Image (cartoon, rainbow, N blue to C red; front, top):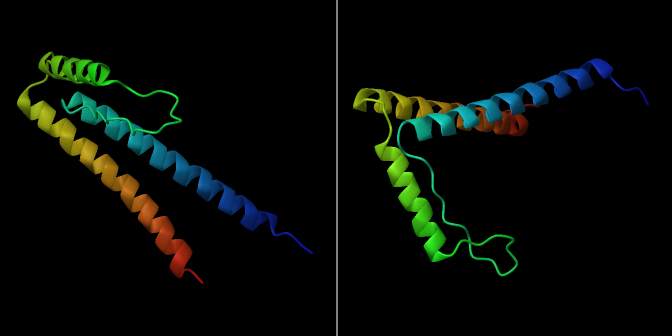
Length: 109
């Protein structure tokens, strides 16, 4: 049994680069989303075996902190809009990378 080490290294490099691109653009998208004044606040799922579950009081406090931070944003409306557009572009790059990888896996013979 012979192993094609060149092909193995190509797959390894492609996976490493692809994962780095997706993680980098996702993190940049989240950062731009926060900078644009829309920080994601996700209510935790209610599981009986969850490690941390926020109470209603803690959730309201977090929402209040998000609203307060949004009011302190020194950016103009145009800069906020540009940040939001940049965030959505970053998320689109992530989605395109994942979709492209799936299409490559499914239809590449």
